Length: 518
Image (cartoon, rainbow, N blue to C red; front, side, top):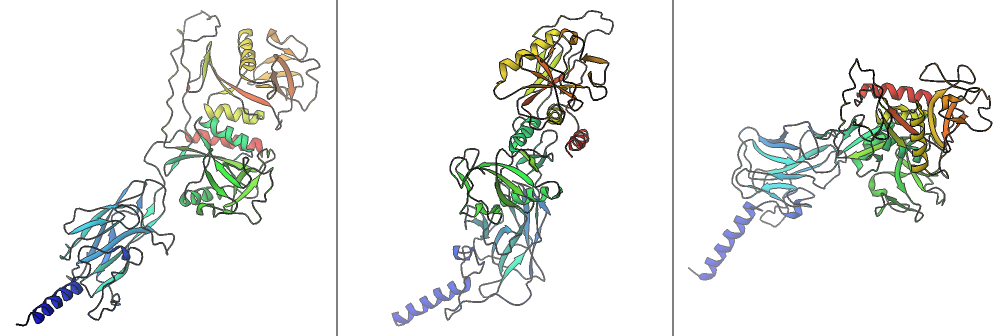
Protein backbone atom coordinates (compact mmCIF):
# COMPACT_ATOMS: atom_id res chain seq x y z
CA UNK A 1 0.00 0.00 0.00
CA UNK A 2 1.14 3.50 -0.78
CA UNK A 3 2.87 4.93 2.26
CA UNK A 4 0.91 8.17 1.84
CA UNK A 5 -2.34 6.19 2.13
CA UNK A 6 -1.08 4.48 5.30
CA UNK A 7 -0.10 7.82 6.82
CA UNK A 8 -3.50 9.27 5.95
CA UNK A 9 -5.29 6.36 7.62
CA UNK A 10 -3.17 6.76 10.76
CA UNK A 11 -3.85 10.49 10.94
CA UNK A 12 -7.57 9.91 10.44
CA UNK A 13 -7.68 7.36 13.28
CA UNK A 14 -5.75 9.66 15.61
CA UNK A 15 -7.93 12.66 14.83
CA UNK A 16 -11.13 10.66 15.08
CA UNK A 17 -10.08 9.19 18.43
CA UNK A 18 -9.27 12.65 19.74
CA UNK A 19 -12.65 13.96 18.69
CA UNK A 20 -14.45 11.02 20.28
CA UNK A 21 -12.62 11.24 23.56
CA UNK A 22 -12.43 15.05 23.77
CA UNK A 23 -10.40 16.06 26.81
CA UNK A 24 -9.86 12.54 28.06
CA UNK A 25 -7.55 13.45 30.95
CA UNK A 26 -9.88 16.00 32.54
CA UNK A 27 -11.67 19.27 31.91
CA UNK A 28 -9.37 21.98 30.50
CA UNK A 29 -8.75 25.27 32.29
CA UNK A 30 -10.84 27.02 29.63
CA UNK A 31 -13.89 25.25 31.05
CA UNK A 32 -13.46 26.64 34.60
CA UNK A 33 -15.76 29.65 34.11
CA UNK A 34 -18.34 28.55 31.53
CA UNK A 35 -18.33 24.85 32.53
CA UNK A 36 -18.59 23.92 28.83
CA UNK A 37 -16.20 21.20 27.59
CA UNK A 38 -15.25 22.86 24.31
CA UNK A 39 -15.76 19.62 22.33
CA UNK A 40 -15.62 19.89 18.54
CA UNK A 41 -17.37 17.86 15.85
CA UNK A 42 -15.53 16.39 12.80
CA UNK A 43 -15.96 19.73 11.04
CA UNK A 44 -14.08 21.41 13.86
CA UNK A 45 -17.25 23.16 15.05
CA UNK A 46 -18.24 23.52 18.73
CA UNK A 47 -20.74 20.97 20.03
CA UNK A 48 -23.59 22.54 22.00
CA UNK A 49 -24.88 21.12 25.31
CA UNK A 50 -27.84 18.77 25.05
CA UNK A 51 -31.25 20.39 25.35
CA UNK A 52 -32.91 17.14 26.41
CA UNK A 53 -33.78 16.57 30.10
CA UNK A 54 -30.65 15.51 31.90
CA UNK A 55 -30.47 11.98 33.29
CA UNK A 56 -28.09 13.22 36.00
CA UNK A 57 -28.54 15.05 39.31
CA UNK A 58 -26.43 16.31 42.21
CA UNK A 59 -27.11 15.32 45.83
CA UNK A 60 -25.55 16.65 49.02
CA UNK A 61 -25.47 15.07 52.46
CA UNK A 62 -25.91 18.32 54.45
CA UNK A 63 -28.11 21.37 54.44
CA UNK A 64 -25.68 23.52 56.48
CA UNK A 65 -21.90 23.72 56.73
CA UNK A 66 -19.50 25.61 58.98
CA UNK A 67 -16.06 27.02 58.37
CA UNK A 68 -13.76 24.08 57.67
CA UNK A 69 -16.70 21.68 57.49
CA UNK A 70 -17.22 19.04 54.79
CA UNK A 71 -20.02 18.12 52.40
CA UNK A 72 -20.37 14.85 50.52
CA UNK A 73 -21.46 15.48 46.90
CA UNK A 74 -22.88 12.66 44.75
CA UNK A 75 -23.48 12.58 40.98
CA UNK A 76 -26.47 10.30 40.40
CA UNK A 77 -27.75 8.97 37.06
CA UNK A 78 -31.02 7.27 36.14
CA UNK A 79 -32.22 4.58 33.77
CA UNK A 80 -28.76 3.12 33.44
CA UNK A 81 -27.38 6.17 31.62
CA UNK A 82 -23.67 6.25 32.47
CA UNK A 83 -21.21 9.11 32.16
CA UNK A 84 -17.53 9.39 31.31
CA UNK A 85 -16.57 13.01 31.96
CA UNK A 86 -17.55 15.74 34.43
CA UNK A 87 -16.48 19.00 36.10
CA UNK A 88 -17.75 19.85 39.61
CA UNK A 89 -17.36 23.06 41.63
CA UNK A 90 -18.86 24.87 44.66
CA UNK A 91 -19.95 28.48 44.12
CA UNK A 92 -21.64 31.14 46.26
CA UNK A 93 -25.42 30.84 45.95
CA UNK A 94 -26.24 34.46 46.80
CA UNK A 95 -24.77 35.70 43.54
CA UNK A 96 -26.25 33.63 40.73
CA UNK A 97 -23.60 34.95 38.36
CA UNK A 98 -20.66 33.85 40.48
CA UNK A 99 -18.09 31.93 38.45
CA UNK A 100 -15.40 31.59 41.13
CA UNK A 101 -15.15 28.20 42.83
CA UNK A 102 -14.60 28.19 46.60
CA UNK A 103 -13.39 25.54 49.01
CA UNK A 104 -11.39 22.44 48.14
CA UNK A 105 -12.21 18.94 46.96
CA UNK A 106 -10.78 15.54 47.71
CA UNK A 107 -11.62 12.30 45.92
CA UNK A 108 -10.79 8.64 46.27
CA UNK A 109 -12.96 7.59 43.33
CA UNK A 110 -11.02 5.70 40.69
CA UNK A 111 -10.51 7.57 37.40
CA UNK A 112 -11.20 10.99 38.97
CA UNK A 113 -8.91 13.76 40.20
CA UNK A 114 -8.92 17.24 41.70
CA UNK A 115 -7.87 20.17 39.56
CA UNK A 116 -7.08 23.87 39.94
CA UNK A 117 -9.15 26.68 38.44
CA UNK A 118 -8.39 29.67 40.68
CA UNK A 119 -7.02 27.90 43.77
CA UNK A 120 -5.50 24.49 44.42
CA UNK A 121 -8.04 21.63 44.35
CA UNK A 122 -11.03 23.96 44.01
CA UNK A 123 -12.60 21.68 41.34
CA UNK A 124 -12.85 17.96 40.63
CA UNK A 125 -12.98 16.26 37.21
CA UNK A 126 -12.44 12.98 35.34
CA UNK A 127 -8.97 11.53 34.93
CA UNK A 128 -9.86 9.45 31.87
CA UNK A 129 -12.91 8.47 29.82
CA UNK A 130 -13.69 5.25 31.63
CA UNK A 131 -17.32 4.91 32.74
CA UNK A 132 -17.69 6.39 36.23
CA UNK A 133 -19.43 4.38 38.96
CA UNK A 134 -23.10 4.77 39.83
CA UNK A 135 -23.54 7.16 42.78
CA UNK A 136 -20.02 8.54 42.47
CA UNK A 137 -19.31 10.75 45.55
CA UNK A 138 -16.52 13.21 46.35
CA UNK A 139 -15.82 15.35 49.45
CA UNK A 140 -15.78 19.15 49.55
CA UNK A 141 -14.18 21.12 52.40
CA UNK A 142 -15.41 24.62 53.24
CA UNK A 143 -13.01 27.59 53.35
CA UNK A 144 -11.21 28.53 56.57
CA UNK A 145 -12.78 32.01 56.57
CA UNK A 146 -16.35 33.28 56.42
CA UNK A 147 -18.08 32.62 53.10
CA UNK A 148 -21.85 32.27 52.59
CA UNK A 149 -24.54 29.92 51.28
CA UNK A 150 -23.28 27.70 48.46
CA UNK A 151 -24.47 25.53 45.60
CA UNK A 152 -22.59 22.84 43.75
CA UNK A 153 -22.57 23.14 39.96
CA UNK A 154 -21.56 20.50 37.44
CA UNK A 155 -21.22 19.59 33.80
CA UNK A 156 -21.70 15.88 33.07
CA UNK A 157 -20.78 14.21 29.75
CA UNK A 158 -22.32 10.92 28.67
CA UNK A 159 -19.76 10.86 25.89
CA UNK A 160 -17.89 13.26 23.62
CA UNK A 161 -20.95 14.46 21.73
CA UNK A 162 -23.62 14.37 24.47
CA UNK A 163 -23.25 16.40 27.65
CA UNK A 164 -25.31 18.61 29.96
CA UNK A 165 -24.22 21.93 31.49
CA UNK A 166 -25.72 23.73 34.47
CA UNK A 167 -26.56 21.01 36.97
CA UNK A 168 -27.11 22.56 40.42
CA UNK A 169 -27.45 21.03 43.86
CA UNK A 170 -29.82 22.28 46.52
CA UNK A 171 -28.45 25.20 48.54
CA UNK A 172 -26.13 24.38 51.42
CA UNK A 173 -26.50 27.15 53.98
CA UNK A 174 -23.51 28.69 55.70
CA UNK A 175 -23.64 27.91 59.42
CA UNK A 176 -21.97 30.86 61.19
CA UNK A 177 -21.73 29.14 64.57
CA UNK A 178 -18.11 28.39 65.28
CA UNK A 179 -16.76 25.06 66.42
CA UNK A 180 -15.38 26.59 69.60
CA UNK A 181 -16.66 27.99 72.88
CA UNK A 182 -17.33 31.71 73.34
CA UNK A 183 -17.08 33.47 76.69
CA UNK A 184 -20.22 34.19 78.67
CA UNK A 185 -22.51 36.78 76.98
CA UNK A 186 -20.79 36.29 73.58
CA UNK A 187 -22.44 34.47 70.66
CA UNK A 188 -20.44 32.65 67.96
CA UNK A 189 -20.49 33.46 64.27
CA UNK A 190 -17.82 32.28 61.87
CA UNK A 191 -14.46 32.39 63.63
CA UNK A 192 -15.48 35.17 65.99
CA UNK A 193 -17.54 35.73 69.10
CA UNK A 194 -19.85 38.75 69.29
CA UNK A 195 -21.44 40.79 72.07
CA UNK A 196 -24.01 43.53 71.39
CA UNK A 197 -24.81 46.32 73.83
CA UNK A 198 -27.63 48.68 72.90
CA UNK A 199 -26.99 51.58 75.30
CA UNK A 200 -26.30 54.92 73.57
CA UNK A 201 -22.57 55.57 73.77
CA UNK A 202 -19.60 57.35 72.24
CA UNK A 203 -16.83 55.39 70.54
CA UNK A 204 -14.73 55.68 73.70
CA UNK A 205 -17.55 54.16 75.73
CA UNK A 206 -18.13 51.48 73.07
CA UNK A 207 -14.46 50.53 73.40
CA UNK A 208 -14.87 50.57 77.17
CA UNK A 209 -18.02 48.45 76.97
CA UNK A 210 -16.19 45.82 74.93
CA UNK A 211 -13.17 45.78 77.26
CA UNK A 212 -15.37 45.70 80.35
CA UNK A 213 -17.20 42.59 79.18
CA UNK A 214 -13.99 40.91 78.02
CA UNK A 215 -10.57 42.53 78.12
CA UNK A 216 -9.70 41.08 74.69
CA UNK A 217 -12.86 42.36 72.99
CA UNK A 218 -12.88 45.29 70.56
CA UNK A 219 -15.49 47.11 68.46
CA UNK A 220 -16.22 45.19 65.28
CA UNK A 221 -14.21 45.12 62.08
CA UNK A 222 -15.91 43.73 58.96
CA UNK A 223 -13.67 41.28 57.11
CA UNK A 224 -16.01 39.66 54.60
CA UNK A 225 -19.31 40.23 52.84
CA UNK A 226 -20.82 37.41 54.89
CA UNK A 227 -19.78 39.10 58.12
CA UNK A 228 -21.18 42.36 56.81
CA UNK A 229 -24.54 40.71 56.13
CA UNK A 230 -24.51 39.20 59.62
CA UNK A 231 -23.94 42.60 61.26
CA UNK A 232 -26.59 44.29 59.14
CA UNK A 233 -29.00 41.60 60.31
CA UNK A 234 -28.07 42.24 63.95
CA UNK A 235 -28.66 45.97 63.49
CA UNK A 236 -32.22 45.18 62.49
CA UNK A 237 -32.80 43.80 65.98
CA UNK A 238 -32.52 47.39 67.25
CA UNK A 239 -35.12 50.11 66.77
CA UNK A 240 -34.13 52.72 64.15
CA UNK A 241 -36.26 55.21 66.08
CA UNK A 242 -33.84 55.02 69.01
CA UNK A 243 -30.57 53.84 67.44
CA UNK A 244 -28.48 54.80 64.43
CA UNK A 245 -25.92 52.03 64.07
CA UNK A 246 -22.75 50.35 65.36
CA UNK A 247 -19.32 51.88 65.84
CA UNK A 248 -16.43 50.41 63.83
CA UNK A 249 -12.85 50.47 65.02
CA UNK A 250 -11.60 52.35 61.96
CA UNK A 251 -10.29 55.92 61.64
CA UNK A 252 -8.86 58.30 59.07
CA UNK A 253 -7.21 60.57 61.65
CA UNK A 254 -3.76 60.16 60.06
CA UNK A 255 -4.64 60.86 56.41
CA UNK A 256 -8.06 62.17 55.48
CA UNK A 257 -9.96 59.58 53.43
CA UNK A 258 -7.56 56.72 54.23
CA UNK A 259 -9.45 54.54 56.70
CA UNK A 260 -7.27 52.22 58.73
CA UNK A 261 -8.32 49.63 61.26
CA UNK A 262 -6.06 48.29 64.03
CA UNK A 263 -3.17 50.27 62.53
CA UNK A 264 -3.35 48.03 59.46
CA UNK A 265 -2.89 49.08 55.87
CA UNK A 266 -5.64 51.00 54.11
CA UNK A 267 -8.91 49.16 54.63
CA UNK A 268 -11.39 51.44 52.94
CA UNK A 269 -10.87 54.67 51.12
CA UNK A 270 -13.16 57.39 49.88
CA UNK A 271 -12.63 56.55 46.21
CA UNK A 272 -12.63 52.77 46.37
CA UNK A 273 -15.38 50.18 46.54
CA UNK A 274 -14.96 49.43 50.26
CA UNK A 275 -13.73 45.91 49.40
CA UNK A 276 -17.32 45.01 48.51
CA UNK A 277 -18.48 44.96 52.13
CA UNK A 278 -20.26 48.29 52.61
CA UNK A 279 -21.21 51.40 50.68
CA UNK A 280 -20.86 54.99 51.78
CA UNK A 281 -24.04 56.90 52.50
CA UNK A 282 -24.83 59.42 49.75
CA UNK A 283 -22.48 62.38 50.24
CA UNK A 284 -20.16 60.44 52.53
CA UNK A 285 -17.40 60.74 53.43
CA UNK A 286 -17.79 64.48 53.41
CA UNK A 287 -14.07 65.17 53.73
CA UNK A 288 -14.58 66.90 57.09
CA UNK A 289 -11.20 66.69 58.84
CA UNK A 290 -12.97 66.49 62.23
CA UNK A 291 -15.02 63.42 61.31
CA UNK A 292 -12.41 60.71 61.72
CA UNK A 293 -14.48 57.81 63.02
CA UNK A 294 -16.85 55.40 61.35
CA UNK A 295 -20.41 54.21 61.95
CA UNK A 296 -22.46 51.54 60.16
CA UNK A 297 -26.09 52.61 59.85
CA UNK A 298 -29.18 50.40 59.70
CA UNK A 299 -29.11 50.24 55.91
CA UNK A 300 -25.49 49.08 55.94
CA UNK A 301 -24.20 52.44 54.76
CA UNK A 302 -20.99 53.93 56.11
CA UNK A 303 -20.99 57.36 57.70
CA UNK A 304 -18.03 59.32 59.06
CA UNK A 305 -18.68 61.01 62.41
CA UNK A 306 -16.87 62.84 65.19
CA UNK A 307 -14.88 60.46 67.37
CA UNK A 308 -15.86 62.60 70.39
CA UNK A 309 -19.57 62.20 69.63
CA UNK A 310 -20.85 62.08 73.21
CA UNK A 311 -24.53 62.68 72.41
CA UNK A 312 -24.55 59.50 70.34
CA UNK A 313 -27.37 57.16 69.39
CA UNK A 314 -24.94 54.46 68.31
CA UNK A 315 -24.52 51.11 70.03
CA UNK A 316 -21.59 48.79 70.71
CA UNK A 317 -20.88 45.64 68.72
CA UNK A 318 -17.87 43.82 70.18
CA UNK A 319 -15.92 40.91 68.77
CA UNK A 320 -13.33 38.33 69.78
CA UNK A 321 -11.45 36.07 67.39
CA UNK A 322 -11.23 32.33 68.15
CA UNK A 323 -11.25 32.55 71.92
CA UNK A 324 -12.28 30.28 74.76
CA UNK A 325 -14.18 31.25 77.85
CA UNK A 326 -12.08 32.69 80.67
CA UNK A 327 -11.75 30.53 83.73
CA UNK A 328 -12.88 31.72 87.13
CA UNK A 329 -11.34 30.46 90.33
CA UNK A 330 -13.91 29.39 92.95
CA UNK A 331 -14.14 31.42 96.13
CA UNK A 332 -12.02 30.12 99.03
CA UNK A 333 -13.56 28.56 102.10
CA UNK A 334 -14.28 31.23 104.71
CA UNK A 335 -13.57 31.12 108.44
CA UNK A 336 -15.31 28.68 110.73
CA UNK A 337 -18.93 29.45 111.45
CA UNK A 338 -18.12 29.62 115.17
CA UNK A 339 -15.07 31.80 114.74
CA UNK A 340 -15.15 35.16 116.58
CA UNK A 341 -11.85 36.45 115.25
CA UNK A 342 -11.85 39.56 113.08
CA UNK A 343 -8.83 39.56 110.74
CA UNK A 344 -6.68 42.68 110.68
CA UNK A 345 -6.97 44.54 107.37
CA UNK A 346 -3.84 44.30 105.26
CA UNK A 347 -2.86 45.20 101.73
CA UNK A 348 -2.31 41.51 100.99
CA UNK A 349 -4.83 38.70 100.87
CA UNK A 350 -4.69 34.95 101.14
CA UNK A 351 -7.66 34.39 98.83
CA UNK A 352 -7.85 34.17 95.05
CA UNK A 353 -10.00 36.60 93.09
CA UNK A 354 -11.85 36.12 89.80
CA UNK A 355 -10.09 37.02 86.55
CA UNK A 356 -9.22 40.75 86.27
CA UNK A 357 -9.85 41.42 90.00
CA UNK A 358 -7.10 42.11 92.54
CA UNK A 359 -7.38 41.17 96.23
CA UNK A 360 -7.28 43.50 99.19
CA UNK A 361 -8.17 42.26 102.68
CA UNK A 362 -11.36 40.17 102.24
CA UNK A 363 -12.59 41.88 99.07
CA UNK A 364 -11.67 41.81 95.38
CA UNK A 365 -11.39 44.97 93.27
CA UNK A 366 -11.50 45.86 89.60
CA UNK A 367 -10.68 49.36 88.29
CA UNK A 368 -11.80 50.70 84.91
CA UNK A 369 -10.61 54.14 83.85
CA UNK A 370 -12.99 55.02 81.01
CA UNK A 371 -15.05 58.16 81.64
CA UNK A 372 -18.55 57.05 82.56
CA UNK A 373 -21.79 57.92 84.31
CA UNK A 374 -22.83 56.06 87.45
CA UNK A 375 -25.18 53.91 85.35
CA UNK A 376 -22.29 52.83 83.15
CA UNK A 377 -20.06 52.30 86.19
CA UNK A 378 -22.69 49.92 87.57
CA UNK A 379 -22.89 48.24 84.15
CA UNK A 380 -19.10 47.98 84.01
CA UNK A 381 -18.92 46.24 87.36
CA UNK A 382 -21.76 43.82 86.73
CA UNK A 383 -20.57 43.07 83.19
CA UNK A 384 -17.16 42.00 84.47
CA UNK A 385 -18.68 39.92 87.26
CA UNK A 386 -22.38 39.63 88.07
CA UNK A 387 -21.72 40.08 91.79
CA UNK A 388 -19.50 43.14 91.48
CA UNK A 389 -20.76 46.61 92.44
CA UNK A 390 -19.27 50.11 92.67
CA UNK A 391 -17.29 50.45 95.89
CA UNK A 392 -18.53 51.43 99.32
CA UNK A 393 -15.91 52.22 101.95
CA UNK A 394 -16.22 50.23 105.18
CA UNK A 395 -13.01 51.07 107.03
CA UNK A 396 -10.27 53.67 107.18
CA UNK A 397 -7.84 51.09 105.83
CA UNK A 398 -10.06 50.46 102.82
CA UNK A 399 -10.39 54.22 102.30
CA UNK A 400 -6.62 54.57 102.29
CA UNK A 401 -6.31 51.71 99.80
CA UNK A 402 -8.76 53.38 97.39
CA UNK A 403 -7.16 56.80 97.73
CA UNK A 404 -3.79 55.22 96.98
CA UNK A 405 -5.23 53.55 93.85
CA UNK A 406 -6.60 56.84 92.62
CA UNK A 407 -3.31 58.63 93.01
CA UNK A 408 -1.09 55.79 91.80
CA UNK A 409 -3.00 54.61 88.74
CA UNK A 410 -5.05 57.58 87.50
CA UNK A 411 -4.22 61.06 86.26
CA UNK A 412 -5.97 64.02 87.95
CA UNK A 413 -5.66 65.90 84.64
CA UNK A 414 -8.03 63.42 82.98
CA UNK A 415 -10.06 61.98 85.86
CA UNK A 416 -12.00 63.32 88.85
CA UNK A 417 -12.45 60.20 90.99
CA UNK A 418 -14.45 57.04 91.63
CA UNK A 419 -18.21 56.62 91.88
CA UNK A 420 -19.58 55.23 95.16
CA UNK A 421 -22.78 53.23 95.39
CA UNK A 422 -24.40 55.63 97.85
CA UNK A 423 -27.34 58.00 97.41
CA UNK A 424 -29.44 60.52 99.34
CA UNK A 425 -32.37 60.45 96.93
CA UNK A 426 -34.79 59.42 99.71
CA UNK A 427 -33.93 62.07 102.27
CA UNK A 428 -31.63 64.95 101.37
CA UNK A 429 -28.38 64.70 103.30
CA UNK A 430 -29.01 61.12 104.49
CA UNK A 431 -26.60 59.00 102.47
CA UNK A 432 -27.41 55.32 102.32
CA UNK A 433 -25.49 52.56 100.59
CA UNK A 434 -27.09 49.30 99.48
CA UNK A 435 -30.33 50.37 101.16
CA UNK A 436 -28.59 50.05 104.52
CA UNK A 437 -28.90 52.33 107.52
CA UNK A 438 -27.48 55.83 107.43
CA UNK A 439 -23.86 55.60 106.31
CA UNK A 440 -22.83 59.22 106.11
CA UNK A 441 -24.78 62.37 106.72
CA UNK A 442 -24.12 66.04 106.16
CA UNK A 443 -23.60 66.93 109.82
CA UNK A 444 -21.53 64.05 111.20
CA UNK A 445 -17.88 63.22 110.63
CA UNK A 446 -18.51 60.46 108.06
CA UNK A 447 -17.33 57.88 110.59
CA UNK A 448 -13.78 58.99 110.06
CA UNK A 449 -13.42 57.53 106.58
CA UNK A 450 -13.73 60.55 104.29
CA UNK A 451 -14.22 64.28 104.50
CA UNK A 452 -16.57 66.39 102.47
CA UNK A 453 -15.06 68.83 100.02
CA UNK A 454 -15.39 72.41 101.21
CA UNK A 455 -18.95 73.54 100.63
CA UNK A 456 -20.21 69.97 100.15
CA UNK A 457 -22.81 68.65 100.32
CA UNK A 458 -24.49 71.70 98.85
CA UNK A 459 -28.02 70.55 99.70
CA UNK A 460 -28.98 70.46 96.04
CA UNK A 461 -31.90 68.00 95.74
CA UNK A 462 -30.73 67.10 92.21
CA UNK A 463 -27.30 65.96 93.44
CA UNK A 464 -28.11 62.59 94.91
CA UNK A 465 -25.00 60.55 94.03
CA UNK A 466 -21.50 60.48 95.45
CA UNK A 467 -17.96 60.70 94.07
CA UNK A 468 -14.60 60.30 95.82
CA UNK A 469 -12.03 62.74 94.45
CA UNK A 470 -8.25 62.34 94.25
CA UNK A 471 -7.70 64.05 97.59
CA UNK A 472 -10.15 61.69 99.26
CA UNK A 473 -12.85 64.35 99.54
CA UNK A 474 -16.51 63.54 99.05
CA UNK A 475 -18.55 65.45 96.48
CA UNK A 476 -22.23 65.04 95.64
CA UNK A 477 -23.12 65.14 91.95
CA UNK A 478 -26.16 64.42 89.74
CA UNK A 479 -26.68 60.69 89.26
CA UNK A 480 -27.34 61.32 85.54
CA UNK A 481 -23.93 62.96 85.03
CA UNK A 482 -23.20 61.89 81.44
CA UNK A 483 -20.32 64.32 80.85
CA UNK A 484 -18.40 62.60 83.60
CA UNK A 485 -14.67 62.27 84.18
CA UNK A 486 -15.18 59.67 86.88
CA UNK A 487 -14.01 56.08 86.69
CA UNK A 488 -15.38 52.77 87.97
CA UNK A 489 -14.02 51.03 91.05
CA UNK A 490 -15.78 47.68 91.49
CA UNK A 491 -15.69 45.32 94.43
CA UNK A 492 -16.81 41.83 95.34
CA UNK A 493 -17.27 41.14 99.04
CA UNK A 494 -16.06 38.08 100.89
CA UNK A 495 -19.52 36.47 100.79
CA UNK A 496 -19.81 36.54 97.00
CA UNK A 497 -19.79 33.26 95.11
CA UNK A 498 -17.78 34.72 92.20
CA UNK A 499 -19.50 32.61 89.62
CA UNK A 500 -19.75 33.96 86.09
CA UNK A 501 -23.45 34.68 85.44
CA UNK A 502 -25.69 32.85 83.06
CA UNK A 503 -26.75 34.45 79.79
CA UNK A 504 -30.31 34.82 81.09
CA UNK A 505 -29.04 36.68 84.13
CA UNK A 506 -27.03 38.97 81.89
CA UNK A 507 -30.11 39.70 79.80
CA UNK A 508 -31.95 40.74 82.94
CA UNK A 509 -29.10 43.10 83.75
CA UNK A 510 -29.19 44.66 80.29
CA UNK A 511 -32.90 45.38 80.67
CA UNK A 512 -32.05 47.38 83.78
CA UNK A 513 -29.18 49.16 82.02
CA UNK A 514 -31.38 50.07 79.07
CA UNK A 515 -34.04 51.40 81.45
CA UNK A 516 -31.45 53.68 82.99
CA UNK A 517 -30.65 55.11 79.58
CA UNK A 518 -34.08 55.42 78.10
